[in-house]
Length: 101
Image (cartoon, rainbow, N blue to C red; front, side, top):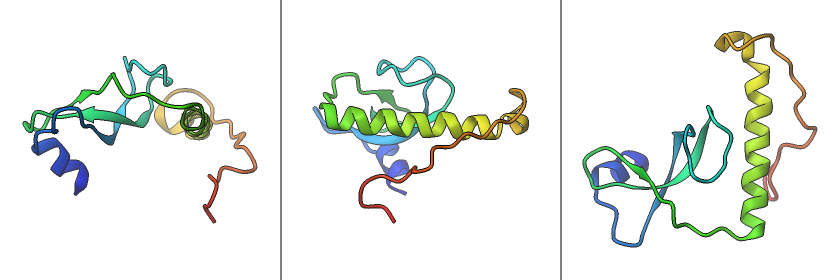
């Protein structure tokens, strides 16, 4: 519900919201062809644009890259379902973030 609200409500000047979007052509260097939470802005018309001026510190960037690696590993596990080849699962032992159970 929050994602839809963010798309149909103009984003205040200087603000942004996060939502899962297809990563093709993203300015953050996240792997192509996955769905990933990205900083976005909306004019309130149901569409969005990626916010390109969001700064990230080393801790946040480390967490982002860990999530990206997990998604890419999961994508390999379902490759046979998406027509992208044979499945190969090699998920890391620990895919939890700090504080998760």
